[in-house]
Image (cartoon, rainbow, N blue to C red):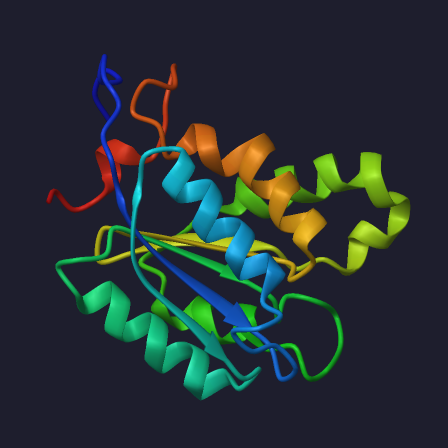
Length: 171
């Protein structure tokens, strides 16, 4: 894994909103994630709003993980317990390795905010083709919680004792 870098490394990030109701005019969660990533010093290289359809989600993420220009994919939406929500099912076949602790940690932190309702969150993460993929619920507050309490630090090479930067494809 190696020793954490002593300086920040800007990462290339793609952001996806999974929703049948959102568009560019009301994608507050996607807007938040893109702004937070840019403010942290990362480069948002692509973004998309994709209907909650297993194959459309998988196709877009597959294109990003095959691209040399994307190191991290952050997805919001489609992680709930409704039958229509299909983000985890779309992602699982793509992962080379699942990051079990991400969903566990997100639910632990969310419990402080929403109590037992966090049981219905299916936040998930994994690594595919040296691309980090993180999927969180679609509410802006859930995206803020995930970014501020987990994701921002894990995308920062200075975070010790470990972070995900050393596992990503080099630019």
